[in-house]
Length: 120
Image 1: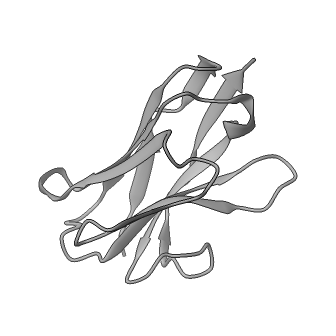
Image 2: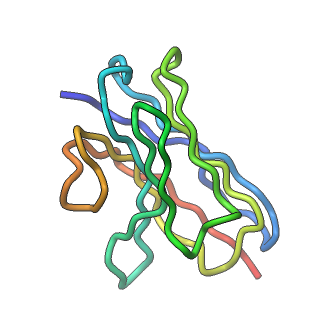
């Protein structure tokens, strides 16, 4: 079973940047899909971005042009670069992975999350 550990969350002012990292316990070369999801208090978990083994990416409309997902197979790590952060980006951010991972109920593996707080 793949274990995923997120890091890089924290408190940042609106307009600032953060980079989240997700380290996997084993090689991600064979994992087709990896992604980032987020959940704000009182809201459902939502997709932020996904990336396939081949490098195809998908983003939520709310983060397009501001966030970038990438994967480094050699380091077994997936990243989420977040720029121009807004208060509405405040949430727990979760790393996920699986043969598919295009929605929250399709990902097989999950990390425990890292909190991102954006102050206005």
